Length: 205
Length: 204
Image (tube, rainbow over all chains, first blue to last red; front, side):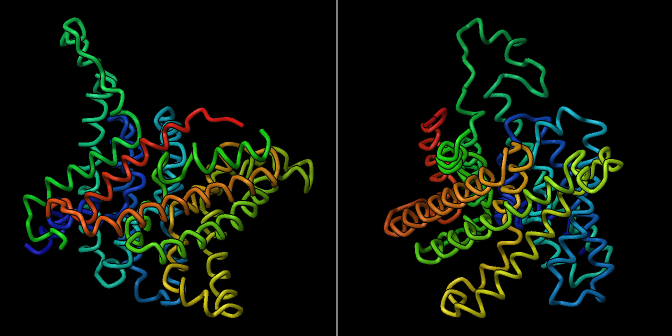
């Protein structure tokens, strides 16, 4: 039951983006369309989960003074692997994500989970915690990607939804503001608003 | 591209926070008062100013495709660019550690005011992305890369000081409880980002 909580909590009460406010940088920049958002989400889940397991296995042998460098080396090795896989199989998305794949290294979710969880827990809970936090991050990413692509360019995964529905003929216009970067911030702000109205105990005084 | 153009562009048009949302974590966490955020802004600018030129040289002479040709012509076909992520982060972590020690030794006052933020800069996305953008945009020489680093740092500094000043005033306004703190900061940053978009296409 406790293990199940590790996966469940990051979805709501302890969401990495909405509550811990970690990993915001990449979450905003890659969500103008659904496809890069999904690819980014999967990459982050893989990196967080594996990095958590590796650091958790090494946790008793890492000297505390140099732990940040050890963590960075482990994370960046994983990110290089992910980067090479993306370049090999989904080259166009990898070009679109540009530096943001590399920036998974400095993604605060990864470092935050390593510091807070993997350094003091056994490998199995660490794996679950990594997957849970990765999924919590993905949910926000996918919601943002969905809303911004649907209302910003009228497509979903490149499929012209609005055109097929025939909305353009009755005067519908795409909202260009949605694909601009600042709109992502405002959307996250609104999601946080909604989320905290549901969970009163998270409100700040 | 000349230096002034790169400088202005990296401060306003390609502002790290308002155009790319880089370094948002510390931007949101440390922007409660103007004083501490100015300290962090200076530290980030300083680290960017050191790491980007070093990584530029590293990229030019070791990592870029064909960069090893200066050692011997037989190495001209070696492409080590897949190593650049690890090399960049290693340089950044080492420099941050070194800056921390130097500042501690020679200026204890500055060290005390920055103290806790210094080690955190190693995992600040703005610093890492300074090096990655430098590599992606292919600046012509080390001067351009340095000017770009300085401009990005100043842009980040301006952004965090501006939001800290706004948040100090926000304390006296009536905001719905659920929106207080992080929520309203996100929305204000979004609005500031919209304002910064008016610089788009700006050239000198």
